[in-house]
Length: 224
Image (cartoon, rainbow, N blue to C red; front, top):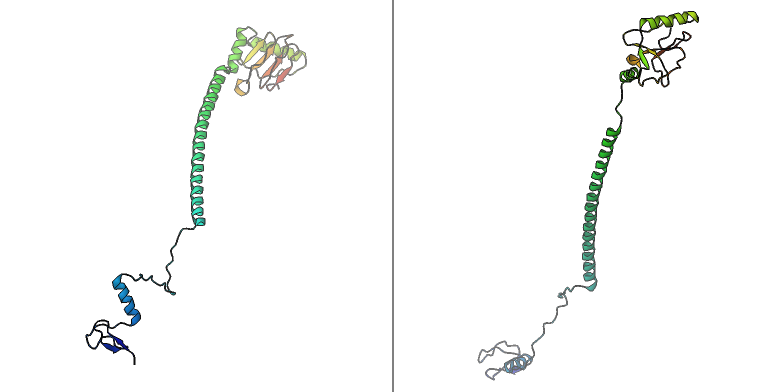
């Protein structure tokens, strides 16, 4: 059995005793006693904690590649926002310019239409054109004598003397070549008796009827 001296009282004690049998002090092995003395003298080195094999402390440090990826992503976001702002500005400017040009175009069309309305000649009714011919003494209202004279001419030339001439401003005797008034259809139609040597009027005969005094012939919708 091994015996050691107590560091406190100096008495020998068993190696396996934890306390000195004489003084009751705590017993320490030689290696531990040496460390105790060194600690009291301030000459011992502080022990560094031994890392446990089962547990290890991992310190996460940002990697360069991760920093680059984050910076690149932020740059892309900023670029997209910048592009969207530029696009929105362009759209607003284009909308403003288009509205201005559209207003100018509408104003131009309005002025053009107004000028066209002002310049366009007012349409003259067939009755007004008839009155104009009468003022120029190119035609005059036919009388019953004028109708009888045509019927006699038709009989002499073996033509039908049936007619649809009516008095009261519906039949006219023509003394010189004229142009048919425009739009003489339906209720606007008239009968015209041409004096001898007067040629057929110019223009559209429409629904009018022409009676020739020279040979008693008839031309138009009223002939029978």
